[in-house]
Length: 458
Image (cartoon, rainbow, N blue to C red; front, side):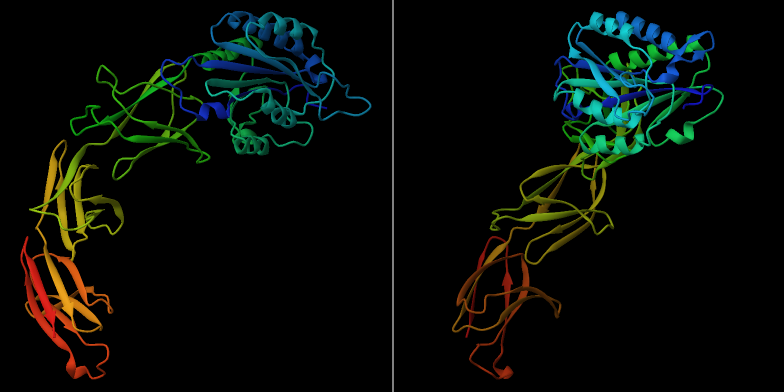
Protein backbone atom coordinates (compact mmCIF):
# COMPACT_ATOMS: atom_id res chain seq x y z
CA UNK A 1 0.00 0.00 0.00
CA UNK A 2 1.07 3.59 -0.54
CA UNK A 3 2.06 5.78 2.40
CA UNK A 4 -1.12 7.57 3.50
CA UNK A 5 0.78 10.69 4.56
CA UNK A 6 2.98 11.26 1.52
CA UNK A 7 1.21 12.40 -1.63
CA UNK A 8 2.51 13.22 -5.06
CA UNK A 9 1.17 14.78 -8.19
CA UNK A 10 3.04 14.08 -11.40
CA UNK A 11 2.39 16.23 -14.41
CA UNK A 12 3.90 15.02 -17.64
CA UNK A 13 4.03 17.14 -20.77
CA UNK A 14 4.80 15.22 -23.95
CA UNK A 15 5.60 16.31 -27.46
CA UNK A 16 4.49 13.85 -30.15
CA UNK A 17 6.39 13.00 -33.28
CA UNK A 18 4.13 15.40 -35.16
CA UNK A 19 5.94 18.30 -33.53
CA UNK A 20 9.21 17.13 -35.04
CA UNK A 21 7.91 18.50 -38.33
CA UNK A 22 8.21 22.23 -38.98
CA UNK A 23 5.20 24.29 -38.00
CA UNK A 24 4.26 26.29 -41.05
CA UNK A 25 3.48 29.97 -40.60
CA UNK A 26 -0.23 30.78 -40.35
CA UNK A 27 -1.12 27.07 -40.02
CA UNK A 28 -3.46 26.39 -37.10
CA UNK A 29 -1.76 24.42 -34.35
CA UNK A 30 -4.09 21.94 -32.65
CA UNK A 31 -3.39 21.35 -28.97
CA UNK A 32 -4.26 17.87 -27.73
CA UNK A 33 -4.39 17.42 -23.94
CA UNK A 34 -4.62 13.91 -22.47
CA UNK A 35 -5.59 13.84 -18.78
CA UNK A 36 -4.54 10.68 -16.95
CA UNK A 37 -6.45 10.40 -13.69
CA UNK A 38 -5.23 8.22 -10.81
CA UNK A 39 -8.18 6.28 -9.38
CA UNK A 40 -6.11 3.94 -7.24
CA UNK A 41 -7.47 2.94 -3.82
CA UNK A 42 -5.27 5.37 -1.86
CA UNK A 43 -7.07 8.30 -3.51
CA UNK A 44 -9.89 7.70 -1.01
CA UNK A 45 -7.63 8.94 1.81
CA UNK A 46 -8.12 12.38 3.32
CA UNK A 47 -5.86 15.21 2.18
CA UNK A 48 -6.02 17.97 4.82
CA UNK A 49 -9.77 18.77 4.74
CA UNK A 50 -11.17 16.56 1.99
CA UNK A 51 -10.70 13.23 0.30
CA UNK A 52 -8.01 13.35 -2.34
CA UNK A 53 -10.32 11.87 -4.96
CA UNK A 54 -12.91 14.60 -4.37
CA UNK A 55 -10.36 17.43 -4.53
CA UNK A 56 -8.79 16.06 -7.70
CA UNK A 57 -12.15 15.47 -9.43
CA UNK A 58 -13.43 18.93 -8.54
CA UNK A 59 -10.29 20.72 -9.68
CA UNK A 60 -9.97 18.76 -12.91
CA UNK A 61 -13.66 19.34 -13.72
CA UNK A 62 -13.20 23.08 -13.24
CA UNK A 63 -10.16 23.11 -15.49
CA UNK A 64 -11.87 21.12 -18.24
CA UNK A 65 -14.92 23.40 -18.06
CA UNK A 66 -12.74 26.52 -18.28
CA UNK A 67 -10.90 25.42 -21.43
CA UNK A 68 -13.44 23.36 -23.33
CA UNK A 69 -14.32 26.28 -25.65
CA UNK A 70 -10.72 27.15 -26.47
CA UNK A 71 -10.23 27.11 -30.26
CA UNK A 72 -8.09 24.37 -31.80
CA UNK A 73 -8.19 22.28 -28.62
CA UNK A 74 -8.94 18.59 -28.22
CA UNK A 75 -9.05 16.69 -24.93
CA UNK A 76 -9.05 13.05 -23.85
CA UNK A 77 -9.32 11.22 -20.52
CA UNK A 78 -7.53 8.06 -19.38
CA UNK A 79 -7.65 6.43 -15.95
CA UNK A 80 -5.35 4.17 -14.00
CA UNK A 81 -6.39 1.95 -11.09
CA UNK A 82 -10.10 2.51 -11.80
CA UNK A 83 -11.29 -0.90 -12.97
CA UNK A 84 -9.79 -3.59 -10.72
CA UNK A 85 -9.78 -3.87 -6.93
CA UNK A 86 -6.58 -4.29 -4.94
CA UNK A 87 -7.94 -7.56 -3.58
CA UNK A 88 -7.31 -10.41 -3.90
CA UNK A 89 -4.51 -9.34 -6.29
CA UNK A 90 -3.48 -6.01 -7.78
CA UNK A 91 -3.76 -5.57 -11.56
CA UNK A 92 -0.67 -3.83 -12.92
CA UNK A 93 -2.28 -3.27 -16.33
CA UNK A 94 -5.23 -1.37 -14.92
CA UNK A 95 -5.51 1.59 -17.30
CA UNK A 96 -8.17 2.55 -19.81
CA UNK A 97 -8.93 5.36 -22.26
CA UNK A 98 -12.35 6.59 -21.12
CA UNK A 99 -12.81 9.44 -23.59
CA UNK A 100 -10.72 9.62 -26.78
CA UNK A 101 -9.62 12.81 -28.47
CA UNK A 102 -12.36 14.71 -30.24
CA UNK A 103 -13.44 18.33 -30.67
CA UNK A 104 -16.02 19.72 -28.22
CA UNK A 105 -16.00 16.73 -25.88
CA UNK A 106 -15.55 18.71 -22.65
CA UNK A 107 -18.97 17.80 -21.27
CA UNK A 108 -18.36 14.11 -21.99
CA UNK A 109 -15.08 14.27 -20.05
CA UNK A 110 -16.74 16.10 -17.13
CA UNK A 111 -19.40 13.40 -16.94
CA UNK A 112 -16.77 10.65 -17.07
CA UNK A 113 -14.83 12.30 -14.22
CA UNK A 114 -17.94 12.09 -11.99
CA UNK A 115 -18.17 8.31 -12.50
CA UNK A 116 -14.59 7.55 -11.44
CA UNK A 117 -14.23 5.67 -8.15
CA UNK A 118 -10.99 4.65 -6.36
CA UNK A 119 -10.32 0.94 -6.85
CA UNK A 120 -6.86 -0.45 -7.51
CA UNK A 121 -3.11 0.07 -7.76
CA UNK A 122 -0.84 2.64 -9.46
CA UNK A 123 0.82 1.34 -12.67
CA UNK A 124 2.32 4.70 -13.68
CA UNK A 125 5.04 3.44 -16.03
CA UNK A 126 2.69 1.00 -17.81
CA UNK A 127 0.04 3.72 -18.22
CA UNK A 128 2.50 6.17 -19.72
CA UNK A 129 3.58 3.53 -22.19
CA UNK A 130 -0.03 2.85 -23.20
CA UNK A 131 -0.96 6.49 -23.68
CA UNK A 132 1.50 6.80 -26.57
CA UNK A 133 -1.11 5.13 -28.79
CA UNK A 134 -3.81 7.62 -27.74
CA UNK A 135 -2.26 10.27 -29.99
CA UNK A 136 -2.97 9.59 -33.66
CA UNK A 137 -0.36 10.83 -36.18
CA UNK A 138 -0.64 14.59 -36.67
CA UNK A 139 1.83 16.99 -38.30
CA UNK A 140 0.33 20.17 -36.82
CA UNK A 141 -0.41 19.13 -33.22
CA UNK A 142 0.99 20.18 -29.87
CA UNK A 143 0.47 17.19 -27.59
CA UNK A 144 0.37 17.32 -23.79
CA UNK A 145 -0.06 14.62 -21.16
CA UNK A 146 -1.16 15.62 -17.65
CA UNK A 147 -1.01 12.78 -15.13
CA UNK A 148 -2.68 13.36 -11.77
CA UNK A 149 -1.72 10.83 -9.10
CA UNK A 150 -1.24 10.67 -5.34
CA UNK A 151 1.60 8.17 -5.33
CA UNK A 152 4.66 6.73 -6.90
CA UNK A 153 4.95 3.61 -9.06
CA UNK A 154 3.56 0.50 -7.31
CA UNK A 155 4.05 -2.13 -9.99
CA UNK A 156 7.80 -2.20 -10.38
CA UNK A 157 7.76 -0.08 -13.52
CA UNK A 158 10.41 2.52 -14.30
CA UNK A 159 9.13 5.87 -15.64
CA UNK A 160 12.69 6.71 -16.74
CA UNK A 161 12.86 3.66 -18.97
CA UNK A 162 9.39 4.42 -20.33
CA UNK A 163 10.57 7.91 -21.21
CA UNK A 164 13.51 6.42 -23.15
CA UNK A 165 11.15 4.05 -24.94
CA UNK A 166 8.82 6.89 -25.92
CA UNK A 167 11.82 8.84 -27.23
CA UNK A 168 12.63 5.87 -29.46
CA UNK A 169 9.08 6.05 -30.83
CA UNK A 170 9.42 9.76 -31.58
CA UNK A 171 7.57 11.02 -28.46
CA UNK A 172 9.45 13.38 -26.17
CA UNK A 173 8.36 12.99 -22.54
CA UNK A 174 8.87 16.15 -20.48
CA UNK A 175 7.45 15.78 -16.96
CA UNK A 176 6.58 18.30 -14.28
CA UNK A 177 6.48 16.53 -10.89
CA UNK A 178 4.43 18.18 -8.16
CA UNK A 179 4.93 16.62 -4.72
CA UNK A 180 2.62 17.07 -1.75
CA UNK A 181 4.01 16.02 1.63
CA UNK A 182 6.89 16.59 3.98
CA UNK A 183 9.63 14.83 1.99
CA UNK A 184 11.51 15.98 -1.07
CA UNK A 185 11.60 13.19 -3.65
CA UNK A 186 13.09 15.31 -6.43
CA UNK A 187 16.26 13.20 -6.59
CA UNK A 188 14.18 10.16 -7.51
CA UNK A 189 12.72 11.91 -10.54
CA UNK A 190 15.56 14.02 -11.91
CA UNK A 191 15.82 11.55 -14.78
CA UNK A 192 12.31 12.37 -15.94
CA UNK A 193 11.59 16.00 -15.08
CA UNK A 194 11.07 18.92 -12.67
CA UNK A 195 9.84 18.58 -9.10
CA UNK A 196 7.38 21.04 -7.53
CA UNK A 197 6.57 20.91 -3.81
CA UNK A 198 2.89 21.63 -3.09
CA UNK A 199 1.74 21.43 0.53
CA UNK A 200 -1.78 22.89 0.45
CA UNK A 201 -4.96 21.72 -1.29
CA UNK A 202 -5.65 25.17 -2.68
CA UNK A 203 -2.27 25.24 -4.40
CA UNK A 204 -3.22 22.23 -6.49
CA UNK A 205 -5.67 24.31 -8.49
CA UNK A 206 -3.08 27.03 -9.07
CA UNK A 207 -0.52 24.50 -10.29
CA UNK A 208 -3.06 22.97 -12.68
CA UNK A 209 -3.78 26.43 -14.06
CA UNK A 210 -0.07 27.04 -14.63
CA UNK A 211 0.33 23.74 -16.46
CA UNK A 212 -2.75 24.32 -18.59
CA UNK A 213 -1.56 27.83 -19.39
CA UNK A 214 1.74 26.44 -20.64
CA UNK A 215 -0.07 23.79 -22.66
CA UNK A 216 -2.49 26.15 -24.40
CA UNK A 217 -0.31 29.17 -25.00
CA UNK A 218 1.73 28.72 -28.15
CA UNK A 219 5.34 29.52 -27.42
CA UNK A 220 7.02 31.53 -30.14
CA UNK A 221 10.63 32.47 -30.73
CA UNK A 222 12.88 34.27 -33.14
CA UNK A 223 16.54 33.55 -33.75
CA UNK A 224 18.53 36.77 -34.04
CA UNK A 225 21.67 36.23 -36.06
CA UNK A 226 23.65 39.24 -34.92
CA UNK A 227 26.09 41.23 -37.03
CA UNK A 228 29.16 42.99 -35.63
CA UNK A 229 27.02 46.00 -34.68
CA UNK A 230 24.66 43.83 -32.61
CA UNK A 231 21.83 44.02 -35.14
CA UNK A 232 19.87 40.91 -36.22
CA UNK A 233 20.56 41.36 -39.92
CA UNK A 234 22.17 38.02 -40.87
CA UNK A 235 19.88 35.45 -42.53
CA UNK A 236 19.42 32.77 -45.23
CA UNK A 237 21.16 29.98 -43.34
CA UNK A 238 19.85 26.64 -42.06
CA UNK A 239 19.38 26.00 -38.33
CA UNK A 240 18.99 22.73 -36.43
CA UNK A 241 17.37 22.48 -33.01
CA UNK A 242 18.44 19.46 -30.93
CA UNK A 243 17.16 18.22 -27.59
CA UNK A 244 20.05 19.15 -25.28
CA UNK A 245 19.44 16.11 -23.06
CA UNK A 246 19.10 13.39 -25.69
CA UNK A 247 20.83 14.86 -28.75
CA UNK A 248 17.76 14.09 -30.84
CA UNK A 249 17.06 16.46 -33.74
CA UNK A 250 13.73 18.24 -33.19
CA UNK A 251 13.52 20.91 -35.93
CA UNK A 252 15.26 22.03 -39.10
CA UNK A 253 14.57 25.59 -40.29
CA UNK A 254 15.96 27.88 -42.98
CA UNK A 255 16.37 31.28 -41.35
CA UNK A 256 14.71 34.24 -43.01
CA UNK A 257 13.74 37.84 -42.36
CA UNK A 258 10.04 38.67 -42.65
CA UNK A 259 8.46 41.43 -44.71
CA UNK A 260 9.37 43.94 -42.00
CA UNK A 261 13.04 42.99 -42.02
CA UNK A 262 12.85 41.15 -38.69
CA UNK A 263 13.77 37.51 -37.99
CA UNK A 264 10.73 35.38 -38.75
CA UNK A 265 8.70 33.82 -35.92
CA UNK A 266 9.01 30.11 -35.06
CA UNK A 267 6.66 28.03 -32.92
CA UNK A 268 8.58 25.73 -30.59
CA UNK A 269 7.89 23.29 -27.77
CA UNK A 270 8.71 25.15 -24.52
CA UNK A 271 9.33 21.95 -22.57
CA UNK A 272 12.59 21.14 -24.37
CA UNK A 273 16.02 22.55 -23.54
CA UNK A 274 17.64 23.14 -26.92
CA UNK A 275 21.08 22.90 -28.43
CA UNK A 276 20.95 25.13 -31.51
CA UNK A 277 23.38 24.79 -34.41
CA UNK A 278 23.37 27.50 -37.08
CA UNK A 279 24.97 26.08 -40.21
CA UNK A 280 27.12 29.04 -41.13
CA UNK A 281 30.72 28.42 -42.25
CA UNK A 282 32.03 27.64 -39.69
CA UNK A 283 28.97 26.67 -37.63
CA UNK A 284 27.72 28.77 -34.72
CA UNK A 285 26.25 26.93 -31.73
CA UNK A 286 24.32 27.76 -28.57
CA UNK A 287 23.73 25.33 -25.70
CA UNK A 288 21.07 25.08 -22.99
CA UNK A 289 18.50 27.33 -24.66
CA UNK A 290 15.30 27.40 -22.62
CA UNK A 291 12.03 29.11 -23.58
CA UNK A 292 9.46 30.92 -21.45
CA UNK A 293 6.14 29.13 -22.14
CA UNK A 294 3.37 31.23 -23.64
CA UNK A 295 5.75 34.08 -24.45
CA UNK A 296 7.69 35.32 -27.47
CA UNK A 297 11.32 34.42 -26.93
CA UNK A 298 14.35 36.03 -28.58
CA UNK A 299 17.41 33.82 -29.12
CA UNK A 300 20.52 35.82 -30.10
CA UNK A 301 23.63 34.31 -31.69
CA UNK A 302 26.69 36.18 -32.95
CA UNK A 303 27.01 35.44 -36.67
CA UNK A 304 28.65 38.35 -38.56
CA UNK A 305 29.47 37.23 -42.09
CA UNK A 306 31.26 38.29 -45.23
CA UNK A 307 32.03 36.73 -48.62
CA UNK A 308 34.87 34.99 -50.42
CA UNK A 309 34.94 35.18 -54.21
CA UNK A 310 37.45 33.45 -56.48
CA UNK A 311 38.26 34.52 -60.02
CA UNK A 312 40.92 33.54 -62.52
CA UNK A 313 42.61 36.21 -64.56
CA UNK A 314 41.92 35.74 -68.28
CA UNK A 315 40.62 32.34 -69.44
CA UNK A 316 40.08 29.47 -67.03
CA UNK A 317 41.52 26.35 -68.67
CA UNK A 318 40.77 24.15 -65.67
CA UNK A 319 37.66 22.01 -66.03
CA UNK A 320 36.62 22.49 -62.41
CA UNK A 321 38.97 24.33 -60.10
CA UNK A 322 38.30 23.90 -56.38
CA UNK A 323 39.61 25.72 -53.32
CA UNK A 324 39.89 24.15 -49.86
CA UNK A 325 38.85 26.64 -47.14
CA UNK A 326 40.25 26.26 -43.61
CA UNK A 327 40.22 28.43 -40.51
CA UNK A 328 43.52 30.20 -40.07
CA UNK A 329 46.14 27.84 -38.59
CA UNK A 330 43.64 24.96 -38.47
CA UNK A 331 44.04 21.84 -40.62
CA UNK A 332 40.32 21.01 -40.74
CA UNK A 333 38.68 21.74 -44.10
CA UNK A 334 35.52 23.81 -43.62
CA UNK A 335 34.40 24.02 -47.22
CA UNK A 336 35.28 23.25 -50.82
CA UNK A 337 34.50 26.27 -52.99
CA UNK A 338 34.88 26.52 -56.74
CA UNK A 339 36.43 29.29 -58.82
CA UNK A 340 33.95 31.84 -60.19
CA UNK A 341 31.69 31.30 -57.14
CA UNK A 342 30.89 33.38 -54.06
CA UNK A 343 30.33 31.90 -50.59
CA UNK A 344 29.46 33.38 -47.20
CA UNK A 345 31.71 32.89 -44.13
CA UNK A 346 31.84 34.02 -40.52
CA UNK A 347 34.15 37.01 -40.32
CA UNK A 348 37.78 36.21 -39.56
CA UNK A 349 40.93 34.84 -41.19
CA UNK A 350 41.10 31.78 -43.42
CA UNK A 351 43.80 29.67 -45.07
CA UNK A 352 43.26 28.69 -48.71
CA UNK A 353 44.54 25.73 -50.69
CA UNK A 354 43.80 26.32 -54.37
CA UNK A 355 43.90 23.04 -56.29
CA UNK A 356 45.79 24.32 -59.31
CA UNK A 357 48.87 22.59 -60.68
CA UNK A 358 50.96 23.26 -58.74
CA UNK A 359 48.79 24.13 -55.74
CA UNK A 360 48.62 27.69 -54.50
CA UNK A 361 48.54 28.36 -50.73
CA UNK A 362 47.24 31.61 -49.25
CA UNK A 363 47.32 32.10 -45.47
CA UNK A 364 45.42 34.57 -43.33
CA UNK A 365 42.96 35.79 -45.96
CA UNK A 366 40.60 38.16 -44.17
CA UNK A 367 36.80 38.04 -44.49
CA UNK A 368 35.14 41.28 -43.36
CA UNK A 369 31.51 41.85 -42.50
CA UNK A 370 29.21 42.45 -45.50
CA UNK A 371 32.25 42.77 -47.73
CA UNK A 372 33.46 40.52 -50.53
CA UNK A 373 37.08 39.44 -50.47
CA UNK A 374 38.13 38.59 -54.00
CA UNK A 375 41.02 36.21 -54.55
CA UNK A 376 42.62 36.42 -58.00
CA UNK A 377 44.24 33.30 -59.38
CA UNK A 378 46.86 33.82 -62.13
CA UNK A 379 45.77 32.65 -65.54
CA UNK A 380 47.25 29.27 -66.36
CA UNK A 381 48.97 28.08 -69.49
CA UNK A 382 48.55 24.83 -71.39
CA UNK A 383 51.48 22.48 -71.94
CA UNK A 384 51.43 19.80 -74.64
CA UNK A 385 53.90 16.98 -74.03
CA UNK A 386 54.91 14.56 -76.79
CA UNK A 387 56.82 11.33 -76.15
CA UNK A 388 58.32 9.00 -78.74
CA UNK A 389 57.51 5.93 -76.65
CA UNK A 390 55.80 5.05 -73.38
CA UNK A 391 57.70 5.54 -70.17
CA UNK A 392 57.55 7.08 -66.65
CA UNK A 393 57.34 10.87 -66.79
CA UNK A 394 57.12 13.45 -64.00
CA UNK A 395 56.81 17.26 -63.93
CA UNK A 396 58.53 19.39 -61.27
CA UNK A 397 58.42 23.08 -60.44
CA UNK A 398 61.93 24.52 -60.55
CA UNK A 399 62.25 26.88 -57.58
CA UNK A 400 65.76 28.20 -57.97
CA UNK A 401 67.20 24.74 -58.37
CA UNK A 402 64.88 23.04 -55.86
CA UNK A 403 62.68 20.40 -57.47
CA UNK A 404 59.08 20.43 -56.23
CA UNK A 405 56.96 17.57 -57.55
CA UNK A 406 53.83 18.65 -59.43
CA UNK A 407 52.41 15.82 -61.53
CA UNK A 408 53.02 12.30 -62.87
CA UNK A 409 51.96 11.78 -66.47
CA UNK A 410 50.33 8.65 -67.82
CA UNK A 411 53.15 6.25 -68.62
CA UNK A 412 51.45 4.90 -71.75
CA UNK A 413 50.13 8.17 -73.24
CA UNK A 414 52.34 9.52 -76.01
CA UNK A 415 50.65 12.92 -76.05
CA UNK A 416 49.18 14.78 -73.07
CA UNK A 417 47.92 18.29 -72.41
CA UNK A 418 48.40 19.67 -68.88
CA UNK A 419 47.14 22.95 -67.43
CA UNK A 420 49.85 24.53 -65.27
CA UNK A 421 50.34 27.79 -63.42
CA UNK A 422 52.96 30.25 -64.76
CA UNK A 423 56.50 29.32 -63.77
CA UNK A 424 59.67 27.42 -64.60
CA UNK A 425 59.42 23.63 -64.76
CA UNK A 426 61.50 20.54 -65.44
CA UNK A 427 60.28 17.28 -66.93
CA UNK A 428 62.04 13.99 -66.25
CA UNK A 429 61.42 11.05 -68.59
CA UNK A 430 62.88 7.68 -69.42
CA UNK A 431 61.63 5.45 -72.27
CA UNK A 432 60.12 2.30 -70.86
CA UNK A 433 62.12 -0.07 -73.07
CA UNK A 434 65.41 1.50 -71.99
CA UNK A 435 66.79 -0.20 -68.87
CA UNK A 436 69.68 2.16 -68.26
CA UNK A 437 69.29 5.25 -66.07
CA UNK A 438 71.80 7.19 -68.08
CA UNK A 439 69.27 7.54 -70.91
CA UNK A 440 66.99 9.70 -68.70
CA UNK A 441 65.77 12.83 -70.51
CA UNK A 442 65.72 16.00 -68.34
CA UNK A 443 64.19 19.04 -70.08
CA UNK A 444 63.27 22.48 -68.79
CA UNK A 445 60.37 24.60 -69.99
CA UNK A 446 58.52 27.76 -69.00
CA UNK A 447 54.76 28.24 -68.72
CA UNK A 448 53.30 31.69 -69.35
CA UNK A 449 49.73 32.84 -68.59
CA UNK A 450 47.33 32.31 -71.45
CA UNK A 451 49.93 30.75 -73.74
CA UNK A 452 50.51 27.26 -75.08
CA UNK A 453 53.83 25.49 -74.58
CA UNK A 454 55.05 22.40 -76.47
CA UNK A 455 57.54 19.97 -75.00
CA UNK A 456 58.99 17.22 -77.22
CA UNK A 457 60.79 14.45 -75.38
CA UNK A 458 63.35 12.90 -77.74
